[in-house]
Length: 169
Image 1 (cartoon, rainbow, N blue to C red):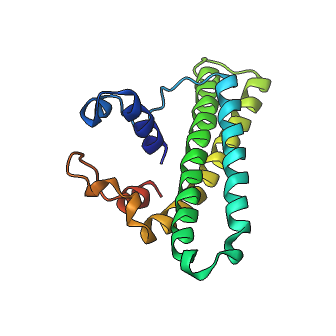
Image 2 (image 1 turned 90 degrees about the vertical axis):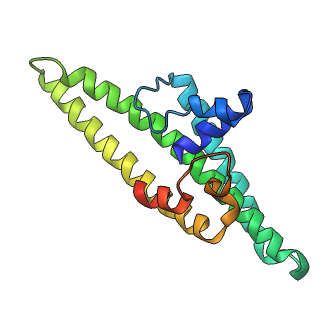
């Protein structure tokens, strides 16, 4: 999911999909994100959560002729929320991982460094657990909405979306 948002953002800034593919390091651990960028992404997650909740709150009030289209758009919004959450989770995970690696590369650790390293491992596990649940939510939506699958495009070389999410899980 993280790679999908990165790809889409880079595609918009490139001269086409061929150029965009060069910018697509999916799931790279070398991404360096500032605390301000992490805070901005966390704000984006909160905004998407509010927006999806507002859509969900109107679900029962949609007239039958519009209900099917509403469901598709609600699914699209919910799927985009899973992508934004995945990006935020990646930011937090790789930031914690970098700190953990910086601490543990020393030949000897103080008690406070050992405690911090252990806390970082617990934090990374919690992030991974939440990201796994997020991917499961995305998989449910992807299975019922074929519009989300980029593998049907002939100009790109993607595995089917559901297979990519299942592999991640």
